[in-house]
Length: 222
Image (cartoon, rainbow, N blue to C red):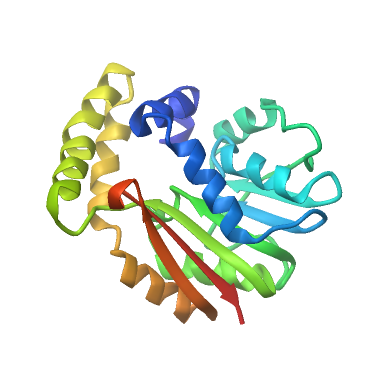
């Protein structure tokens, strides 16, 4: 599915989020605590938008790996330039549930808008925690459904009615019809925090973005 939508993926993200997604990725990068010379893994990196932010944070002396199962997404990622002064990302095909990295090999692991697509959330988070060094961070940025009020109404209307129509107009109706289904079954913030803690992370915290339509989770490897 992601191979098929790769040509329109970035444009649809911008439309779906009214351009707010860039700010959310910057917030996720800040949550990692990365500094120049450090290393990071971006899981389910897609076309590499967050990966490039991480590359900027670690600088030319750092190391960043963007990993995805979709070869079409990785082809697009490789074609995108990184900001001046950034690390040059290493793009690799891989399974988020069986990461091809040694234990404790990076300073941070991130996943943006990818966890809800995994058939085993706990295993994905456990793998991310495994490859992070003690004291390093795991950060999750994901679409969420606000628990109540006008935010919940707006989220349901947008994701369940508007986005599928936009997807059909873009020629990818099945993919963007899948999106609301994946959002509906994604666990709430407290449940995601519990999964992070059970993966061996401490200081787990989260905050809502965009009125609760997006949630940013972060934790530290014990």
